[in-house]
Structures are given as structure tokens and as C-alpha cells.
Image (cartoon, rainbow, N blue to C red):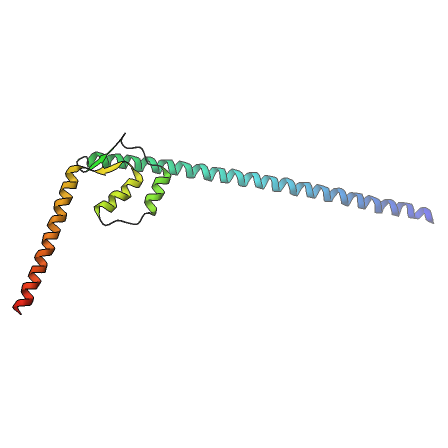
Length: 154
């Protein structure tokens, strides 16, 4: 009767060996699938990064062209000291976007200097700005005088 155990033991051993090899094959298949997924994820990220770099480059080129037009159309008011317009970078554009909106001309020039660091107002513009400030001061003085006269007459 013990000879009947030999085929049973052989079947059990074959089943164990078969299950081990199928587990190894499954593990290898999963490893290949994960590797393929990682490679695809890297390729997608690289494609996204390249697309973003192209967008950034196009954006900076467009802004640079607009800056050149601005400088050309306002030659009498804005002067580029040094070599001229150096070109907009993505970092300078991000700094410009992050800066708060400015109400005064000097504040706007300060913001503009984020894009074109060597920008300044022309002497002619500064002279006009000085005259405007003096006029504002005189108008404020006249308003105060008007109030004082109205208060005395009542």
C-alpha cells in the first residue's frame, strides 16, 4: 500500500513546485507592469514639463515683444539706461505678477522695473511730474482757503 503513496506524494510535490513557479511568474509580471507604469508616468511628466517650458518661453517672448513696443511708443517718457531692454525672464514675470497693483506713477515704474530693471523716467517727464505735484499742492491750498472763507461767512 505504500506504493500508492508515491503518486500522491509526486502530485503534491508537483503542485507545490507549480504553485511556486506560477507565483514567481505573477510576481515578475507585476514587476514588469509596475516598471512600465513608472516609465509611462516619467514620460508623461517629461511631456508636461516640456509643454510648460514651451508655454513659458512663448509667454516671455510675447511679453518681451510688448515691452519693446511699450518702450518704443513711450520714448519721451521712459528711458532705458545701459544696454537697453535686456529681455523678460519667467522669474521677472512671476515677480511682476506677484507685485501689488500700483496707483502712482512712481509705483508703476517700480513694478515696470521688475520686467525691465534699467528703466527710468525721462527728465522731461520728471519735470512735468514735478509741475503736476506743485499744481496739486496749490489746488489743495485753494480748497483749504475756500473752506476757511465759507466757515467765516457763516
